[in-house]
Length: 238
Image 1 (tube, rainbow, N blue to C red):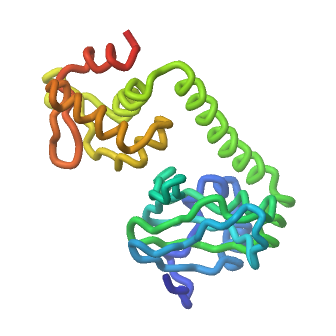
Image 2 (image 1 turned 90 degrees about the horizontal axis):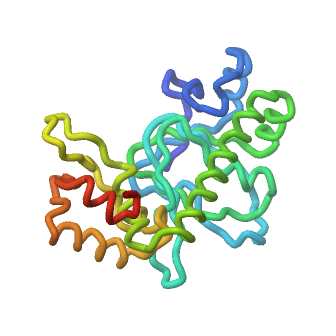
């Protein structure tokens, strides 16, 4: 990860969702206050810390190009991917607001351009712009709703059913029109496990069972769902 010294056309915040309501002059001023970083795949942009640890900075990061993964570790020290963020996203805002430690690490998945804004400038931006505040609240509300949906799923469905539901969420009709559905790029087992509130071993067992019963077949980096109705039935939807 290295600092980009010279301002360029790549260093723009116009695609960042929570900043979409800024005027041209406000956007330009915010861009000038950022430190711009170029990240290579595997670079650690943020490192998780104890929530009560006193940090020297509570910067906010805006991802203007590329993709990153939000990563933590379970009780066995296994890496868990909590989410993947793409261009236009932001991270680090919780620490900027409550001045506590970082709850997860952030790693570059691809080459990335990231804008780093210090806490003082971020709080000033929120204080002077109600639209940015509202957009940030909407982002938080989406996270809370996803948490509520996850809690309902955990209390309603079995481990395997929740895994089947995750596969159904990310599937789409085969463009060939043969009645099958596709998961074109299957997430890592650790991400499916996190999303479904299960373990990687549960994911491996559930998917392995579907493959053995020919309900799904492995296809390149994803899956082809041969029997959508059977999978829906196993997931408890019918």
